[in-house]
Length: 283
Image (cartoon, rainbow, N blue to C red):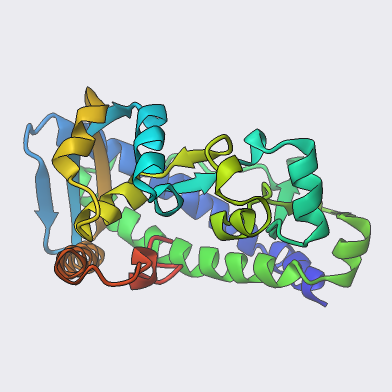
């Protein structure tokens, strides 16, 4: 019955409401970004509303990943600093991985609305002052959180729909519900179990987040690694969020730094930093 729950969500107007909330919050966020940019400050806290707006600068680098790959291969730690690039696998390698059931493919549900669900909402908040727009943003952001969470769970459950698994695509009055597959993936460990270390070099790409983790654990020196990067640019990223969400992100980063510090002292087995945070944290 999972596919009918999606249809019910749409028929009850929740999908249209969710998209309207999305449009309103995105539009107001852009207005706040322009207002904030002209203040020439990096962070503004709107305490009465419980919202913070801020610009965060982010340095961008280009990496000589081929040189890093060679270095890690020579050090014998390439397996811990890379991921398999599926496009680099040969046809024979793909077939052998498929036969061994080692290719990971996940399914997901996509809804493509037709013209009946076209957004017709007017920009009724345009003449409001910034404070009032922020209050509107906060109200519709909370609605969007609830609706998006429900929509995500419905699509997740619909992946097991017998109808979708058989037909792959179902047309309803408001659009098309499709069952799609993610890009195939294979773990480094599974690849090694079949082909060994000799074929690894040609099919991997360096994962910079894993490199930083190796440095924190003391297996490599980050100052040496930085020789393989070149500064590109500084980008400003704008955030508009609840103050409580900002605090949660701060606590997460603090735990992450604490863990990296612990790893540098103990050289303990690899820990997945992503496990520190729930899947729906940034929804």
